[in-house]
Length: 157
Image 1 (cartoon, rainbow, N blue to C red):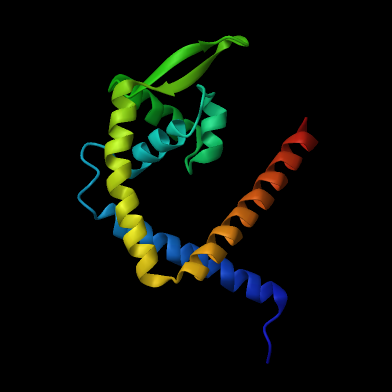
Image 2: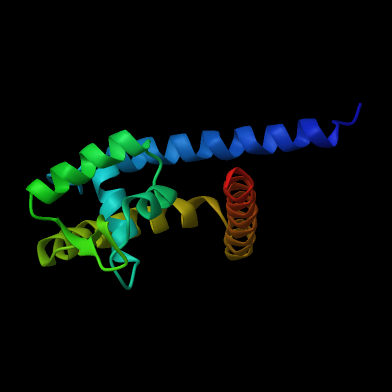
């Protein structure tokens, strides 16, 4: 009996989450993180991809943390001198976040090692064509998720 489209979608989603969890455990076990947690690295990485400082809610779109947990993590990273806060020029009450030079250095050092681990794991399991397909599928799902989230935010406003 053929699986329904809905069942196939849920099976694909479960497979994606299982792969993510398995790889994240593998990466977490690598001795590359030093004094950073993977969540802290995720914040540094997300900030490193930006050309200009960003607001906390913008940062929250790129990491898998609740707003309160993200606020506490940002506080800890700022206390360690890895993130700096600056007044938002468009909103005097707002704050923008950016990496300090030490934050950039931590991100580059750990990021280089992490990239090697990711490449090793992915190339061991997938062909070049499968990697291209996975990238395209991931981008497509991310765009769809972002579009849905933006539409929900606009409906609330």
